[in-house]
Figure 1 (cartoon, rainbow, N blue to C red):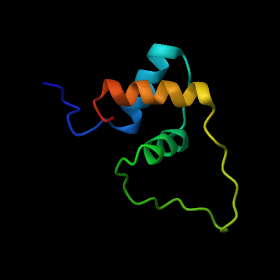
Figure 2 (figure 1 turned 180 degrees about the vertical axis):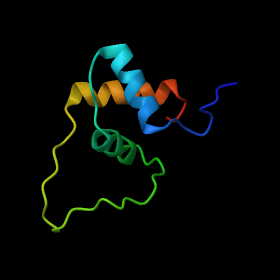
Figure 3 (figure 1 turned 90 degrees about the vertical axis):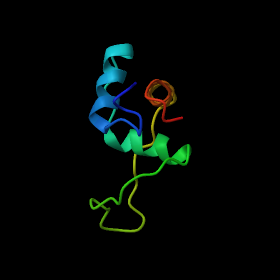
Figure 4 (figure 1 turned 180 degrees about the horizontal axis):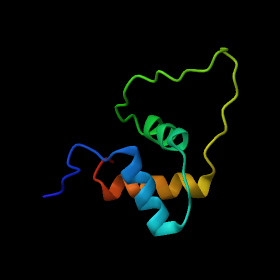
Length: 76
């Protein structure tokens, strides 16, 4: 049985994506993909100071790599 039954840590997802694709992905990108799939996330204490702060969007190839990692860890 996988030790990641209830989900993997962000570091585990980053490591898996790096091993499989060579991409370095940020926690922001992982959070965006998790939100897209409706996965539970903890409260974020590192909120932007203004309401209209711009955030970079996850590129399509990294989004696919993160989704593959989430499938690997049986999160989606």
